[in-house]
Image: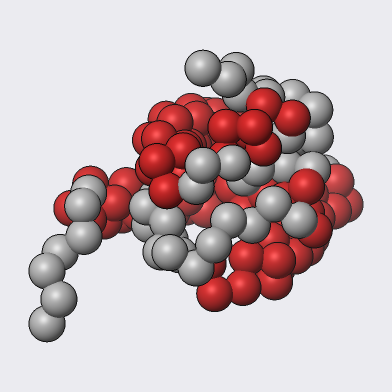
Length: 158
């Protein structure tokens, strides 16, 4: 058995917290009273776009795919969808959460989706520290590539 990797406890904690927040999004979409009239059409569209983004990013990551914030040593994905967005998997999950909120019209689902966005903001900051350490070209890549949306949230070099 190999020794635990640097930050593995923190990584597992973040993955578990991510799952709990997403569970809150899904649960509140069904367990509370609607706040506004939901749009099944718009919600479903967002969910399908989110799923498409997740599958596309998984395909482009290949063997580098890991739920942990630490890179697994399989290389930096900077092509395909990663040429436009640094964290498309998280963008897809956010779209799914927003789709559940829009589709259900429930206030707590919107609130949970906002918490999820905040969580991903924090998680990506930690993840990017690992990526800068592991891949010398990551800083340059992040300075030209949006974080969750193309062109938005580019990282300052330095």
